[in-house]
Length: 170
Image 1 (spheres, rainbow, N blue to C red):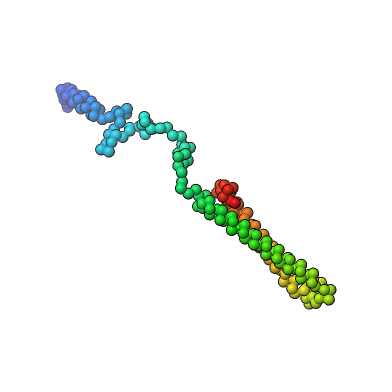
Image 2: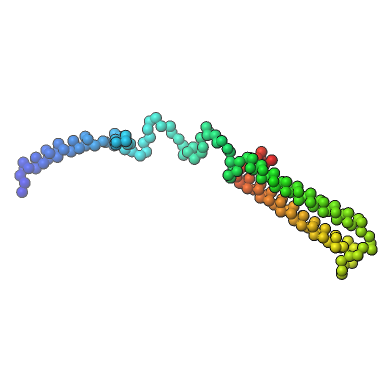
């Protein structure tokens, strides 16, 4: 059994050691320090000189940011213009070829006579082997025009999704 003096000595020692330990340890209001510098005890406390920034501002580029090249979906303004110009040139070429073939068919039908020999089994004098070939060419040219116009529409949709300005589509 311990004597009352042992208990009082232990209480006295505890009374002296605990304040020393508490005095050496920082309180919740005091910042702790490490070798690299002070560390804040509370995670939500901000330094007094730091500006307050809203979360939506963190997700946007600052107003002062200027990129050397503006890109949309990985392409610059000149690349978008080039893509639109290429598709439009293909449409113009397909329409020009269609017009030439139609003109050639018109000339062939104007020069034909009622006595012209037609394809076997056909009673139509317009269905000569030449006009059959030209009619097939016209169908092919029309399909080519439709295909290039579909590519232009697809490019416009892609540009809309990439927020490409109208000036880049010229």
